[in-house]
Image (tube, rainbow, N blue to C red):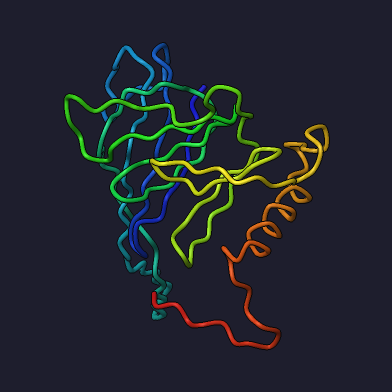
Length: 202
C-alpha cells in the first residue's frame, strides 16, 4: 500500500509526494528499490499540445495536455500511512492519519532527518488540519488545542467538541468548528457581505 498527497507548484506543474513502505512492489525505473520506508517526491510538468483531426476537407483543432514525470527527491521516512503535506520556509510538514506531525528539510543532504514535532508527552493527537492559502499558513487541531504548523509549536486552548464526536468519515462538523475558532481568534479574516473577492493572477 502506498499513500500520496499532491501540491501545486505552478499553473504548469504539480509536485506529488508518495509514501512507500520498505517492502513494496511499487517500483519501476523512476522509483528504484530503497530498502527503507521513504517519501518519494515527483514532479509532473504539463505542456500544451495541439491535437488535429482531419475529416475530408474539415480540419478540427483542440488543445490537449501532455507532460513528463521526474524524480525530484527521496526522503527516509519515519512513517508510512495516509498524510497531508505543506511546505513552509524550506521545510516539508507532514500531518499523518494517526495524528502526528513531522518536519524535514526540503533540501537533500546526508544529515537530513525527519523529526517528530507532535504529539509530545501528555498531548493529544491531531484530528484536523486547515490551510489558509491566502495567508500561506496552516493550522493543526487536537480536540482541545490548536497551533500554527511551524518548527516551533505554540499550542492554544480551544474546544472543537467531544472527542467521540470527531468522525473521520464525516469531517464537516469538526472542520466548521475549527474554522470558527480561527475566525474568532482573528487568525482568519472573512470578507464582508457583498465584498468582492480579489482576483488572483494565473
